[in-house]
Length: 394
Ligand SMILES: *[C@@H]1O[C@H](CO)[C@@H](O)[C@H](O)[C@H]1NC(C)=O
Ligand SMILES: *[C@@H]1O[C@H](CO)[C@@H](O)[C@H](O)[C@H]1NC(C)=O
Ligand SMILES: *[C@@H]1O[C@H](CO)[C@@H](O)[C@H](O)[C@H]1NC(C)=O
Ligand SMILES: *[C@@H]1O[C@H](CO)[C@@H](O)[C@H](O)[C@H]1NC(C)=O
Ligand SMILES: *[C@@H]1O[C@H](CO)[C@@H](O)[C@H](O)[C@H]1NC(C)=O
Ligand SMILES: *[C@@H]1O[C@H](CO)[C@@H](O)[C@H](O)[C@H]1NC(C)=O
Ligand SMILES: *[C@@H]1O[C@H](CO)[C@@H](O)[C@H](O)[C@H]1NC(C)=O
Ligand SMILES: *[C@@H]1O[C@H](CO)[C@@H](O)[C@H](O)[C@H]1NC(C)=O
Image 1 (tube, protein in one colour):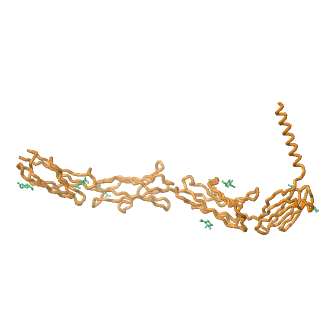
Image 2: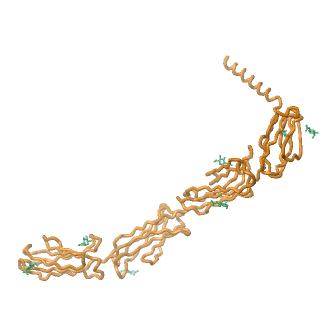
Image 3: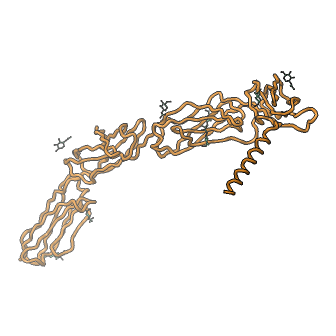
């Protein structure tokens, strides 16, 4: 109880004291910083208890005014220097003075924004904001906004800069999908004492795009004159509806239909491996978005299974007699194959060639000795043809 009463009493005393100390008119400049457009007049005002309060300034005084407890003068600013003027309490007390700075300013003639309207995602992009013919530069702040939010801010500050300036600020950022359809703009803010003068650039709506390298899925080995599927996928491309896919097989373009699914664009096509010659064939997938292209290439091995001609010098022999096995591939491109002759129980006799002969002594396997010729497609052990002949040994 006692404490609260004491507090109340204390508060009342403080309040009374404050009111009382405000009571006598304080001598001071009402606004210590005054800004005016060049060649325009501005009022400078001092509160004073003394009606003899007067102003001293290098500036041209256009008009004066006074009222109860204030004296004001209207000055014209016609250069870019900062003028410090004073109000003096009275001629008798010329040591009592209050300073006022008067500064000329110029609103920007325009604020421009340079940004590419089409930005590649994950790539560096720049925004160039230019504020034309502004003064004074040190009071300028340039804010860059995206969808209304400030994403970058540059305040100049520093010593006073004379005259109007054209100021550019460049902001570099990594574009992302979130920037798509966003409005970007620049704003010039002149901080004139407590007042802000704001000038905006036009808004630019930005579109983003992404065209990753397509992924091509084709079988590595395809038998001649059979069909196969080639699938090309552009994952996470944007905007998906604008992406087109084209397939080019050995420089012949194929029209394919692109389908958007789960954020990916897929094109599948069935192709015939109809070539006069087997061998490596190139398949290219080209993705196109606006004027941009990205592509990927794959090679398919079009093969023909080996056709074997395999003969033994004789089919029935005596033991210890020599036998010659000859085997060759009859296909049109013999260099694609190698041939191996194996006599049961012996090491293989193989050559990096499409034809082979092998002479051996019939010493085992009575009465039957299997002899096998295997022709491989070079580079793929899974693709081969094989013939086994049986030698009768007595
Ligand atoms: C000067 O300040 C006083 C007190 O704030 C105000 O009443 C008066 O209108 C001002 N005069 C001018 C010319 O601005
Ligand atoms: C105050 O204003 C009146 C009327 O404008 C003028 O006659 C008088 O000289 C002024 N007083 C001062 C101290 O400026
Ligand atoms: C920014 O734009 C201004 C005005 O168009 C130009 O003078 C300046 O060179 C540009 N700056 C850059 C870094 O592109
Ligand atoms: C400019 O940007 C700064 C920093 O984000 C912010 O404090 C200020 O309020 C912005 N000014 C305006 C007028 O948006
Ligand atoms: C973006 O700017 C354009 C043109 O100034 C305007 O039509 C559109 O409504 C703006 N979009 C948003 C989200 O503010
Ligand atoms: C490719 O060959 C197959 C089988 O030989 C045939 O049915 C088909 O019509 C051929 N296609 C083309 C495009 O030549
Ligand atoms: C069988 O071939 C071996 C080695 O080529 C040779 O030494 C041998 O004389 C031949 N035997 C007969 C019966 O021709
Ligand atoms: C023949 O080709 C097959 C399949 O590529 C391979 O595994 C084998 O080593 C080749 N043989 C020789 C002698 O090069």
